[in-house]
Length: 232
Image 1 (cartoon, rainbow, N blue to C red):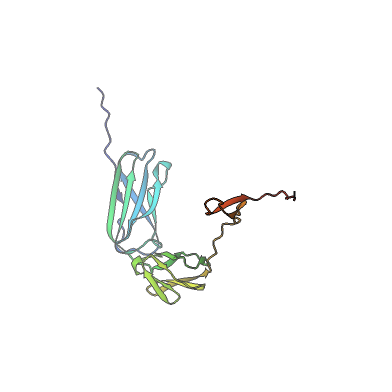
Image 2 (cartoon, rainbow, N blue to C red; image 1 turned 90 degrees about the vertical axis):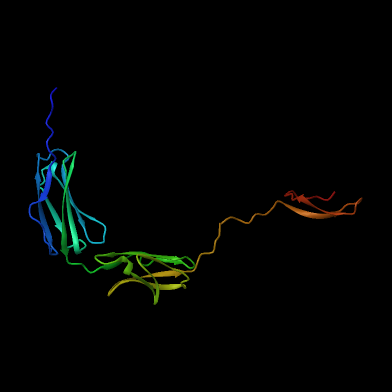
């Protein structure tokens, strides 16, 4: 029986460690792959993990297409803070190898609030609850967002609602610390429901008559005829 030698799984590492303090600019991160030459389907993928925030994909390198094993990090756009982590994974088509560098510091970016609902210039019928939705673009906690309609605080966080607004133009403001954005929407009179169908008219009418034997009163339908009635 012939046995084929199975190559050892590849190992991956950063050619030069980052940081620990990173500038807000583009950074090229060379990656060293120790093992067999990357074959079909081999690629590198990077993931940036800021403290207390979801991981962010930072790029993929298609090694099987001949691309160099270098990750391009756009640190001008990534969320920052103390204790960020970069993870680089290499997949050779069968197995995966990963290297991680933590303890990185990227200066935080001032968070900018963004309103996604209602859209600017929206016309909302009176009596309808207005859904307020948004997010924070940059560093910071979305729970610190404050919703204000005209001069009244409607809630905090990425979502809130506004009810019982009068007819007219209203201003919604989303504020995060010292930064805020605002837009206008209009509450209009609610339309009167109408199904557009004609009122039904029955083709008959009722007459009242008295029984000659029991002297009780009855109501009976009488068909309306469109034919002219001639005197006999």
